[in-house]
Image 1 (tube, rainbow, N blue to C red):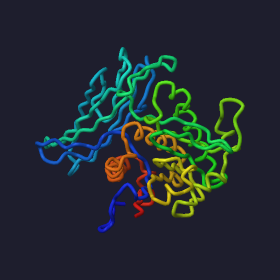
Image 2: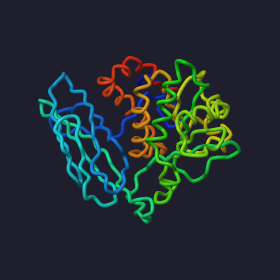
Image 3: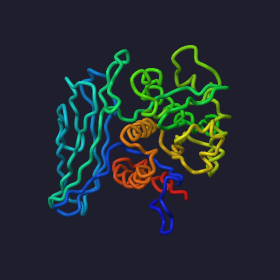
Image 4: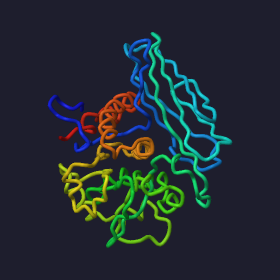
Length: 333
C-alpha cells in the first residue's frame, strides 16, 4: 500500500514486498505530457562471455488506455523486438557492463523510458575484470552450523522458511529452493573476479554440509529451521510460513538482532505466492540487486516507492499477484 499521510518512508522502515522487477525508474519525457508508467526487466543481469542473447520485457500502464509503441535501443549489441518483449543479441561483446533502453510512447506522443543493464563477465579462470564495470551481483552460499557469515559483502540476504514444509507449503518451498540453486551462482565462482563489496550474498541455513552438488530435496531435508526462526522472530508478525527473503546491510548472525531491531532491512514475503511464480519472484529479486545499490539510504527510499508502482504495472499481467497485492506489499513504520 502507498504510505499513509504522516508515515515517513525511510530506509529504517520495514518493506515487505511482493515482487521486485529490475530496471531504472521510468523517466517521462519533457514533451508530450506525462508518459505511461513503465517498468522493465532482463532475463539475466549477468552472463558469461560468449552468451548469445538475453530476453527483455517491459510492462506499461497507459494513461486513459491509450495505445502504446515500444522502441528498444542498446549501447552495444542489437535489440530485436518492437513490442513489450525483445531479445538482446550480445554476440561479439567484450567483458563489461552494457545498457538497454525501452522508450514507451502513447498515442498522444507522451513517452517514458526504462533501462536495464547486463554484465558480460569473463570466464571464472580469467581474472582482472575492471571493478568499475561490475554491477552488484547475487551469490549463494550455505550457512552451515557453527559457522558465521563472512565479512565484507555489500548486502547480506537470507532465504528463510518459518517452519517445516506442510502439504500446502511443500511445493512452494521446493520451487523456491530449486530456483535458488539454479539461478544464483555459487559465491566461490563469483569471488574469483567480483570483489565482495559488489556482491549480495544470499545464504541458505543448513544443518550439515552436502557431500555433492545439493538438490532441492536435500536442502529441505537438511534445512536449519531453528536458525531461520532465530532471525524471523525479530521481524514483526508470526512468519510461520514462507518462503521469506530477508536482506540487511550487515550480517544478521553477527549483529545479534541489532540490525533487525534498528529496522535496517528489507523483507519479502512469498507466503501467498503461487508455486509457479516462485522462480519469477526470486529471479526479479536477483535482478534488482544487480541493478540498484539499495543498501544506500537514498536509493533504498526510492526503491521502496518504486516497488509499489512496479507491482501495480506488473500485476496487470499476473492475476495471481494482483489478487493478493494489498497483502503482499505493506509499509511498516
